[in-house]
Image 1 (tube, one colour):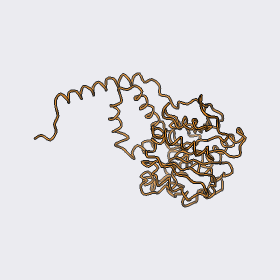
Image 2 (cartoon, helix red, strand yellow):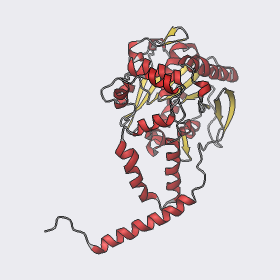
Image 3 (spheres, rainbow, N blue to C red):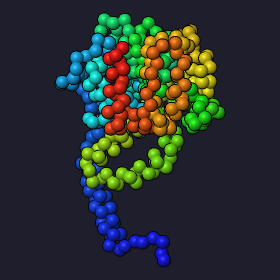
Image 4 (cartoon, rainbow, N blue to C red):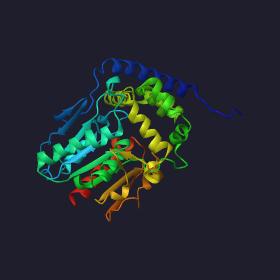
Length: 355
C-alpha cells in the first residue's frame, strides 16, 4: 500500500486555493501603498543632533496623566516604532491607557559625523539632557525610566550613575549577564576583532547587524515566514501588517563606531555588569548604586536576550523593591503579540501607578 493517500479531487482543490491566494495576494501587495511607521500621534518636544524626544498625545478617554513622566529608552539597533507598530498592537497605547505620560527617545540614523560618539555621550549626554528636560518641564526631581533591550542596558547604566534622577526603573528584554550558555549571539562575538571592524568601517552598517540577527534563526526568519505568508495574502489587513513588520526588520540604522566598540568590549566580551570595569565620564558603573524600585521583564522564548541573561539582574542592585515578570513569548512578541497587549503593558502601568 502506498504510504501517502492523495486524492486527486483534494489535490486539485488545494492547488486552486493556493493559486487563488497568490492571485489575490499580488493584488493586495500592489494596493498596500505606503507603510506607516508608528500609529499614535506624538509631538517633538526636544531635539539635539539627530536625537528627537517625542511626547505622545493623550487619547480621548484616557485617564488623567500621572504626575511623574515615563521616558522610554530604545536600543540603537532598529527603530523605536516597534513599540507603536499598529493600532491594535502598541505598547505606547497600552501605557497611555494606564495613565502614563509617555516620552520616547528616537536616536535617528547616525552617519560618519557620529562615528566618534561614545557610550558616555549617549548615557551622560543625550539621555541625561532628556531626563533634565522632563524634570524641568514637569517640576519633578525624578522621572520613571523604561529601557528596552540595549536601551535597558543604557537605562541600567544611567540609573546607576544618576540615582537621584530616577524614581522607578523598568527593564524589558534587557541583557545583564552577556555570557549565559544559551546566548548564541554572544558566542559569535567573543573572538571577533572589534577594533579591526571599527577601525576599518568607522560606523558599523545596520544591514550587517540585521543579517547577523537573522542568521541566528536562518530557516524560520529567512525562509519559513515567507512560505507562511501565502496563507495571509488574501487578507489586505494581514498583508499590510506583514509588510509593516518587514519594514521594521530591515530598517536598521548604522551604529556609531566608538559606541559599538565599547559596548561589545565592555559587555559582550567582558560582561561588565557582572565583572565591573565599565567606566563612563570617569566613573565606574556599579549596579549596586541603583536603589529605586525595579521591574524586570523578560521573554521566556527570547533567542536574542535569553531569559537567564535578564534574570541575572536579581540581586545586583541595592533596590529593596525588585519585581520580575516573565512573558511567554519571544523578543518581538513581547511588544506586538495580542497576549502582550493584555498582560505586559497593563502590568507596567499598574506597577508604576502603585509607586
